[in-house]
Amino acid sequence: MANVNSDIETLNSFLRGELSAVETYRQAIGHVETDNVRDQLQGCLQDHEQRVSSLRDRIEKLGGTPSDSSGPWGVFAQLVQAGADVLGEKAAVQALEQGEDHGLSDYQRDIDKLHGEARRFGRMVLLPAQKQTHERVRLLKKTLH
Image (tube, rainbow, N blue to C red):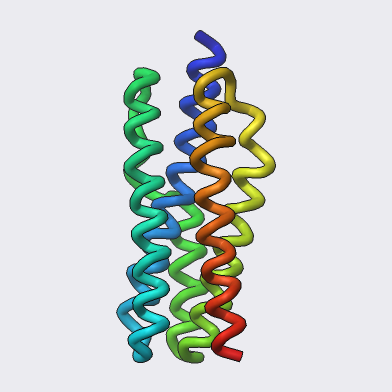
């Protein structure tokens, strides 16, 4: 039972990060002028929304209650994005890349705290998906500079 509670806690931590990413992308998309950039960011938003859904399902299957707010990271993301909104698209994408860096390092740092099926889910679904979204934003940033 301790493993299950620990897994729920770790998955909820990942969920809060994903909720923060969703908030940040939604905010950024509202301030982007260029169609191509907006389309790319929309794709990243959908990636994060998909992970939110997967994490919620997994937490519920383990008997846990999924977090419904992003917590302190959501506040941080809003502050970073607010600054980027004033500075334009390049700064917004750069802020989003920093968020992706943070998300990737969270997954890499905490994935092995999970056990059994939850760990497989983390390694086979969450981490590869986060790496893909991270790379998408990195490449978008390169096209803007």
